[in-house]
Picture 1 (cartoon, rainbow, N blue to C red):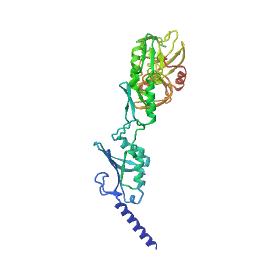
Picture 2 (cartoon, rainbow, N blue to C red):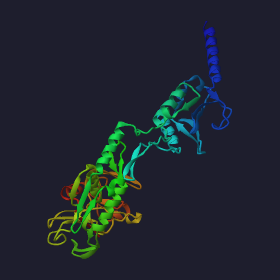
Picture 3 (cartoon, helix red, strand yellow):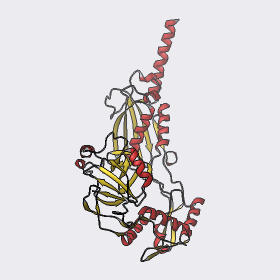
Picture 4 (cartoon, one colour):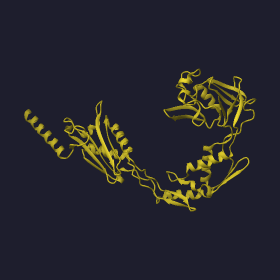
Length: 431
């Protein structure tokens, strides 16, 4: 009886294997995988009018008795899959990758599909032309919804299917709003309301008035169909008025803590805060009201005695690797520091600057670094004062070989103390 049962089991497995082959689960291939004598599993993916792709992997004799989905879970080395894709406009990619688990498989699929040239969908919108808002229809695009497509691919592999035909409805990203949506019409009403705004900005010796003739071409709808302005246009305008109305001291002279009288190139004076002014201007335009106000300044002139009898500044000596903070004529703290590394082209800029803003818990990004800091006080583009908790030592000649990317690194306790007392517009002197 035992021999007879074993005989029946062998016959059953052989028949089952033949049935799998007859259904086309295992195919010979004339491309990848490399060993043409081996059977392979192939899933063809077709999107009419866009692309064709194939996912394949070798099938070993022991694999044929396992569920295909198990092939997504590899050993330490992983299982090698081949992916070939070509679009109707002749873009192709032929690659392979080792897969150790299902999440890794999804990441690789995302990587390949996102490499494919695609046009993202766009919501409808409006453009102000010929004295009215002209509608702009939504654009379907042809951007793959990788989360949906991945689910389909995994399901087809699990069910040992050999062809997946996808459609725009099932596997592509779509515009969220079209012209007929009620929310779009509410957005249009908000845009028309903006046309009633009249903004007068008063400077010391002049005033500037804006009406719909100036800002109507900037108006648009955001991704949620709320009235907005084109940031690039608004920023260009604010920068133009800053260039026209800012008053700066080209250089300043002061006596350093060590007693030397020096002169520095300066950006100090009466300076518009470009980004805060842009935010306020947007608010005024969207209000649909008449507004009279002064501009928002980042620095409103140099305080009397700021460099002598009523010292108010942060002094940074790059050669001494020291910092002093004077407030209301008194030295309230000093510290050793680490400035930018000159050998790597990251020297801390020299000059008279002012703090643009201050922020708590910030991620600083740049070429080759991404760092979180607790106390951030920028004064020259991406350069600022901040804590450097990763440093065990400060001062001396550290900066020459292991300096910052240009910022002034402070001990955490010093940075926290300065942050409590410094304000946007405060002067920073680097020499």
